[in-house]
Image 1: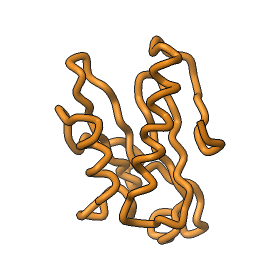
Image 2: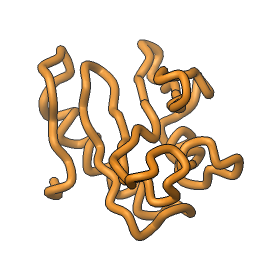
Image 3: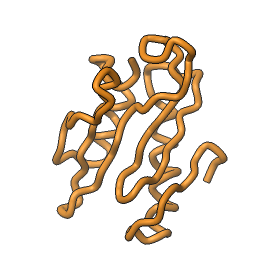
Length: 118
């Protein structure tokens, strides 16, 4: 596991699953299209994985602070939901559900609509 990842909070997910998922998500983020020069961080929160990164565009945080990018949450059927941060409202908004983890990560990494990496 690289130094950019850290696990926060305790939850019912088995540690070996979390230990596998964090580096998997981090590796996928290396292939993103936008802001490749920043180091995003993947945080384990409850059953979800939250991605955060410095705000290089200064569109959300004029000081370039760390902002939320995406929230990935597994469903009981093995699919994943993907949420995007509505920074103005300070809340997560459902973007898609019923995705494979690969589909969810591809959506975040390509970000054709500039929703995740504002």
